Length: 414
Image: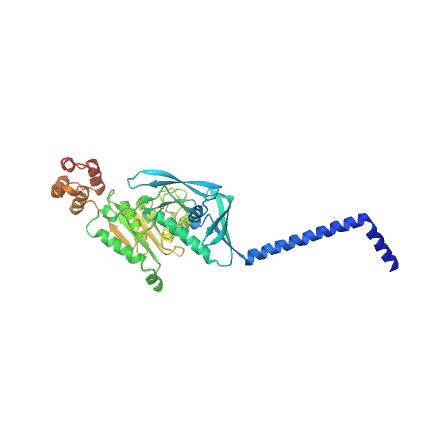
């Protein structure tokens, strides 16, 4: 033992050994301190901070960015967001807004500080835009504060478009806004045959307020409408005005799209926004009758990879979604197959025909309210031509002579 003690004493007196031992001790101490700091940060994040992540695929993402931009008014690093706004006169102007740019931002809400970290990651190949993520962090463990933030962001966004109808189109496997939102079209601006508007709106109201009734009886909660009739009778205008009545957006799905497949069709119908009408326009131009060949061999217009059975299953099959309204239009209802128009796929069939005398009267009085005494004269003027006339032709005639009812009476409706 004496020999070992002497050896240890000699090493302690050695300056090289003392420096090396001290260096090792400092390194070990720093490593322990670093590990302790990491654990402390982890404990702090786990028990003292609350985090919420919102990715760019979520519908609330743009709402949240716009809301954060209003909160962090002192932010110096911002990204421009150009919007197009339509005024009451129908003119479209550009408006520049600012969103928090990728990076870290801070804001205060309801007396609490929040850290906002916006990150832009890899490119989304399907969407063609970068994948983004916003992370909100705040002290405390109350997650309800994030619900308050998202609810306020939603309310602000919806208030900005309360009087507008947004249109979406299919892009890849998702829905994207198309153009700028347009002002809602009043129901009274669409002049239909007597009682027809009331019939459709009553059915729609009964459907959107009967979700519980459907579920209690095990009935799929979805509704299909088929509007048919000659061109120019107001089918698309009716759908636009009904969407405004429901405060719904419109998702336009082109079934003649050459890139459309059965899987993509099903996914699009199942991922459409909940408060939206899915519109299949001119379905007669895309669907052929089964009499043209075997069911599975039928294609739309010979161009797409969607099968006839794929459409039927997407509309009313095991994988079809609930809480959905589908509206279809056609100029030739007689060419549609009965399998497509049966109840469950088409629940309401509405004929929108050429203009009746009543429609002509109401249209004249709407355009020329100060010349109501000439209403019957105009009806006789239109009926002097034995050929049927559509409401689109009547409206075009009124627009041509918008300031002169006498000129509208003198000239033929083209």
